[in-house]
Length: 403
Image (tube, rainbow, N blue to C red; front, top):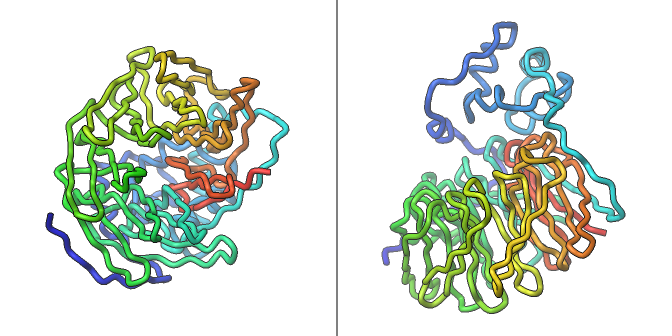
């Protein structure tokens, strides 16, 4: 296995994001005429297509629009006000996408931090062994470290073509990432800034998890492959599977559970043979993005396309599903199980809603994410039983303190 080491320096300064524009292909949609149109076309499309605006749920005021795009790009007051007024006039709030928020007895506190490099699409935060919070800036090919006690952040540049999708820490505090655009799995040593890359056959490594056997297992959505990397030897094995494997988790017996976003199935993979057994979720339209396991190794999952959450009993194959509070268009996305209580988000709503489901009472409770313009794509449970979230569109990393 070929590897290469690259000395990378941590930085707190803004990084150029020119490469992100290359990822946006195709002609942007036509925007309404009016003062500010040219500014929006020239400035907002630097990092994403203007389709993101036309598809948005809008905001009710220029102040809200400005608050949102100030987390994406830094502008002077004159240009910022012109753009905010234009967007508020032509893209008002779509009230049909407001979440159905459910009251309840659980108290939470949501703390959010804006990451240093604007426009990076921060995502997939994790907790390292020392208690620090790490995230990946996918569009800027970086990873960052946050001290949740002080709010201090620093960023580490990764190979510019990597566009890391997911990161996971190992027991020594190294940060492993999936190089979604350069077909690699990489390791960052935070003490030296050195990166070691392992080339994969799969073109787009996606999500990853460490197994108790010490190996790193990962999905590759577009390539429809699963992989296993031995960090000690660099040995890598990859297999072909059903379309679009997405989230991946390990149960207490060592079985790896895989969510499939291209078919209505959940997979159970043996860590040694890498053989996969499939469980079919009702309705061929069902698509599973993320899943997690409770203390009895019951598999909980989000049925994103159907607006449901569900559970699979591996012993019997029985599947039970519940409608999410905001309905069939709510698009549940991330998922985490904390003390056998289910946490997920309704990514189709604006603002993005965080939902709690108690299986014992079959009851829901939900909250609006303060910076909920984007999507929680993945979550992480901290050692003290709290939840790490993010909003990639507004470059936020968040901590949900559960009281």
